[in-house]
Figure (cartoon, rainbow, N blue to C red):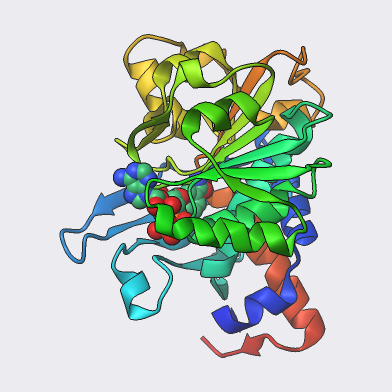
Length: 321
Ligand code: NAD
């Protein structure tokens, strides 16, 4: 069995590797060659933590396994990231455990890759302004991946806790773009692409605030009850997701579907756009919305890529099990 420790991951897999792995597995999902098993996510009644499992099987890539972990909001005070997770890969022919891979950096990379895939396939072609809602750990990964998809000229940002906005300012400087803190009215009006990546349980971005052709990647809502965007905005948009079952149960669409503003049948898997079966954005004026709920198959895809890279570079630990 191979172990790839968390400390090795950042030096092994690039954003491009992550993007390719995620785009490929989204396409496989839309071809029914890969499927996710139902998610388990529980509030464990200790340390305010949410803990669970995301798992699946990709017949095309023969990736079988799970990611186990969750969200511990008090970790930042202990010098740890709030998300903690580990990926387990199993041999699809024998069921033996093939690899254990640190999942923290991988989660951020695969989540950023998912919104980047949505920007590639859905954002207006001449998008210039990237609007960020959320300034926590994931936000820097989101910005780095997003700016590779369009010729952005500026980043604007809003966060409930303004003291975190220095994180966005720093990553904007790193990618060589000007940054401005704005109110939500301006963010919705001026952005061509908006990424939401918060832990919110109430709508932040309202329908009336978004004007003109815009792509919105909703990346923070991954649990029952969470919400970042007004249900009326979800209902107005042309909606895409990684997986429909997750989108309507624990993703951003859960509220619009539950209150009858939209139907499940109005949601398209992004893999269908990647595969050319759905046109994606049809006009420049349209609002497209990607509900990135985070699927287990994304984790397996990037973990499998990491195992190959670790073996090739001789940094994988091989243990008898
Ligand atoms: P973090 O704790 O580092 O940052 C949380 C962010 O949310 C900060 O900007 C904070 O100011 C903001 N926030 C906290 N409480 C809020 C509230 N009540 N209302 C509005 N904003 C609030 O977390 P992170 O690692 O950056 O993750 C952000 C979110 O993304 C989490 O909710 C996490 O579950 C989710 N996430 C989703 C995926 C996916 O695949 N969809 C993957 C990883 C993380």
